[in-house]
Length: 474
Image (cartoon, rainbow, N blue to C red; front, side, top):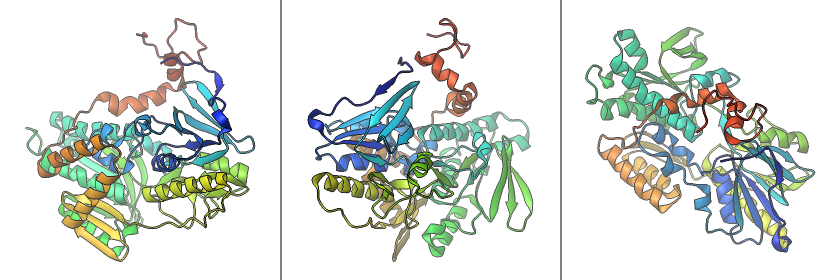
């Protein structure tokens, strides 16, 4: 791939002067908004930071070797290939100009400006370390394919290194896994690491006993799955304990380094857990685009980076700008996929009504379809409001719902096969882990933007024959 640091216009003049709809984000909000507009007489540009649509709720299964990344992250182009009014482009949006009605994106040194008539911003949220971003080096989050692959390498690599270790203290450190955050992601991650240690890997090593691994789930809150209510949260905690997960509540993380994690308990006592593998599943921070929108529109932005929107999900004074999903702050809606999906469909319908000269819909109303989380094999909890389930029935409901929302027939088939291997048997079909997966992120961060410049033909300031990475080009 070769690019240049050119600044170009993204969209050729629309044939027939059709309205231009720009959608930022290829997650649930962006994808469902584009699909909702499939019959609209508009030209859609969907800008994605990645080339795939990520089914984020199953990232932990990629990290623990159950599924491959392709099964939960189909190419966005492939998903929308039959929708002729959509153009998919790769790029990270770095600026939005509400006055000029333009969106600026960049990828590999190429900057592109996308004019719009209607804008849907569904850029989602990233991991929040609550002001301690240095923790990210030692405790990766769970927000991207890169995160999941890095964690897969760290988890399986810890067992491999423990097999080589001579010192018992080092073995104990390598076989201690700490998950920070007792929400659905943390609970599911901790449960699957325990399954790995007690079922999948227990006969695979000769010098170590994987079943002696410690899996610790930490949270500063006093309950597991607090959004599910006290009853289901307590049942989830008991099931985690039975699965071999140590649940430690009222434990606030104060420091993280390569060898372990420091915790302050509710009584003020500070203690340390030596652990090679730490996983951060606590807190989210909305896309920085929310702050850009807030500065231009005057809308308030909260501590989590979410922007306050009007009841119809638009910005004050800008009825052409719609914000959906994790970026918006409205009536304390949860940061779950259904909020993004319903908001995207609502905004797409509003756009069609505006363009047709029809009266707008009433205020956006979120219909809560419930929450669910897996605890271990054959055990889950489901909260459907007045109806609450746990155990095997809840687990089957979880399987069915997640299978329904996976995009693509092929992905559904292979997902079912891999679930059979993992849940009925002891195997994990995706156990490949490389050093590149584990250390690639840190290496790229250390090299900085010069790596991008040296390998894409753009932004070069060095002589033509000089490689800024110090390596020979192919």
